[in-house]
Length: 337
Ligand code: NAD
Image (tube, rainbow, N blue to C red):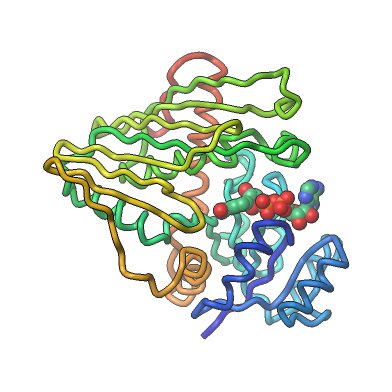
């Protein structure tokens, strides 16, 4: 059985990565489109066979309530719009897949979780790497302790952000590289450690004379301390390209580069003086299809999805602590630790 997705926001990620992959899903199909641009609705409606009765704009969005072909709303808008459209979707009785970062504050994340709980609908965050086979292999290796207990994690994520885009406007993005790409370093540290950090320490480096960084940060490096003693050192950058991580155990280490890309993942395990590339059989589904199928599977099973709203909220609370640490120049203990 397949559930119907309405895609909200027909930008780059939705149209180049998500929509072309829905066809490869077992439990997901594309049934509706939401955009403020009539030309995009016409173009993608024709391309994907979505009739005009299933086209919506931001003004009539709430009438999705009356469309039984829409089971799930996938929010692929600028970050500051995630909370509003998640809450409106829940109020229309729909389940929600929301892109990362979940929102621009932990208060918004809490409101999103509350709205979905009240509506009795499920909420999942688009953490695709949690469904990517190489990353799943690395998580399992770390959890089994095959390289000895994990001691150190390093994770670097960054790209050169082009000027003149919403990502560089704080009201729309909520922050700079950390919100956008550094969140992959944070996610990797948490899913490789398999536990929650108790303390963060961060330093920011931003050239404020660069017009790209009038309102958001460029680079922010952060360290996370985990209860077992694992330390993670993470890079987040809008000025240099990085996509890698390592975790070091007593007996060896795993290196991944690219680690969390759309494709082309390369992972190596170093142990006993030898390096072995991790070669996995072709997966039945790519990470996008696996992520898109996971929410329907969780809905059918009546359980919380793996990358739940709570998972997005945990990241947002840590992101807020990272920003606070950089601002105040001191380590921040995380609440509940
Ligand atoms: P984009 O700029 O390409 O698309 C954003 C869309 O939102 C556009 O279609 C735009 O028209 C629409 N929009 C509506 N109101 C807007 C407004 N006020 N200002 C600007 N745009 C407005 O961005 P994107 O790269 O597709 O990112 C969208 C979301 O997806 C972001 O939250 C981003 O973090 C996330 N994303 C996730 C991944 C991933 O790998 N999981 C990759 C890229 C982007």
